[in-house]
Length: 77
Image 1 (cartoon, rainbow, N blue to C red):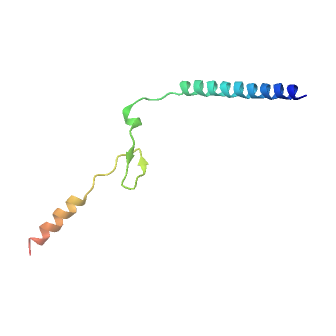
Image 2 (image 1 turned 120 degrees about the vertical axis):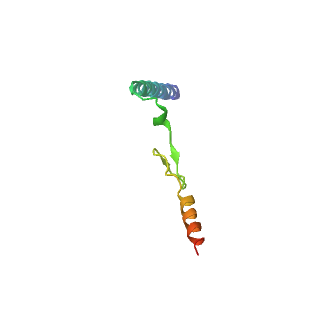
């Protein structure tokens, strides 16, 4: 009795393995069908000061402009 049960389990494992292999092949073919632009601009990602990833470039810091304005008004006194 144990032999027949053992061969049944082996068959189930083989069926699951074949099914998984077939699904992987289908997924691979689907990915190949999808069009990708391949442009460098589409692949670039930017990280902001908080560590968040975005597609748009960050704005340049404006701290230097503020310091120049503050120092200019102090010299007029």
